[in-house]
Length: 275
Figure 1 (cartoon, rainbow, N blue to C red):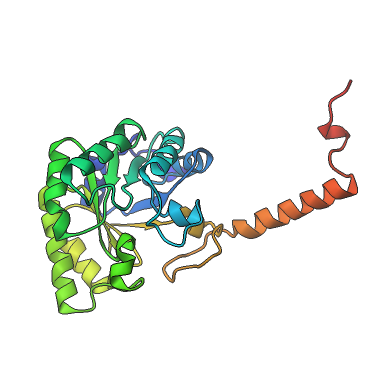
Figure 2 (cartoon, rainbow, N blue to C red):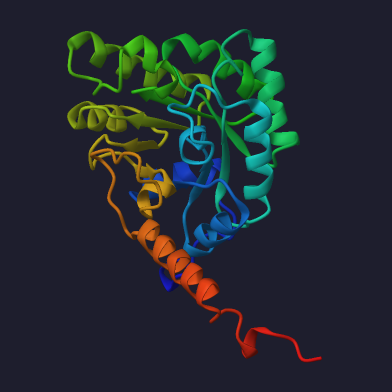
């Protein structure tokens, strides 16, 4: 872990995030979907790891997040949880795992904690989810909210839109954030929200806001790790900054391997056992 993190708590929890906000310390969040990546990100000092339903596109190859199932998400959470020691681990509740009823939502959220090994869940939606968030928190399930562009509602929106441009949207987002804080949410993701609106929300609530395409004034930022390391090439959102280009590295390495196999250069004596 970098020296700059040597004095930080060994294990981050929901209270730690509120403390970070109070101190003005920005929160770094990334997604993770497998054991080795989770371990590397945890060792690097990432504060929160989200097993995102974005796995639908970057792991399973679906065109959007809607098809991924609870069972698929639980398996990913189990793998990630084995690689995490410091970061707060959050499971993303997939489409229709919480919308049908409070009972279904609580059962599925409980599965994330009991079977998946996560410490909190994230769900999409604003004012309409406040009652459910309160009930889940009352039952001991920490909840992260998610407002703005909510990808599970892509068909309702007619695509991926920037949120907070109209007075109605701004009022809904602000009221949603305040109500979700009141219901006990420990943090809120703001996705594709106009920066001035994200700033106002961040200033109006005491729980952290985690931005993704919502400007610099959120209390933290989250990216899909596959985008951040340049592994996913199908599309690249405007808000992504690539810190590596692993797709090219992997493709080049695989090409050299194929060449060595076909030419008889691999395996060599150093990769072979003696009789």
